Length: 304
Image 1: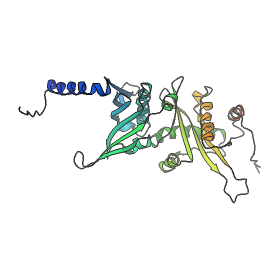
Image 2: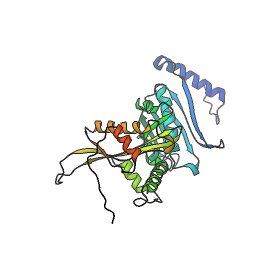
Image 3: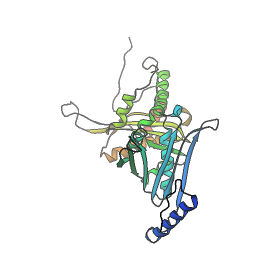
Image 4: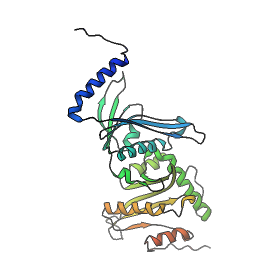
């Protein structure tokens, strides 16, 4: 008997090792196929912007590669690709997603998307650290995908660019409607302000997407009256912002966003949802009326 070291090994020898290990495993785990999958995002000219790949084995999704072209980073594309692969895995019965990343790569991004470190490999490949992360895949990932390819998901820090576009459209709408009150804000928000929303457990920001394009959002805040206030002590959900892009209004997206406010209120055992609206926003007031909102306060103005 003699040991033969091969660098590199022959393909037939690798196949022999793999096949014999699979045969040994079969009595214990059965014949579980390994299914590869990938997703790509392309620009209008058909050029690749980003991509993700991985494989499914049993109840697990393992993500191998995720890359976004540098000039398209920070626009939420990575999050959409991740959700696409996770959603496909859920459709195939997966319960957990697993991946690894180096310390200079995308650990914060994955953590913002629900992944948690379960193991660390220091000094890999020499001076860096490799992190192994996993995330439970729940049925809600499937239910978020609605008819007409509408996706409503909780925003992450990676959605700064997408949220900025939506907030800017709403800012322009208010500036045109009420030019004596609003003005076009450039920039519409800072990273510090936006990250403060994402990291605050008393705030929720959801983004609606249709066919890969952001079409609406809702920003909610869990508020409480202080003990020493003249107002009665109470908790309530305040809708700080809700909007749907002009081209997608009348398709029920606003109602689905509002349903998230009701759901969060129920989770927090809150019985009141409040919001502000402008007198000139006739369509918005009509929408709120159909949703059951009642006017409880008015702000009056005297122009001299």
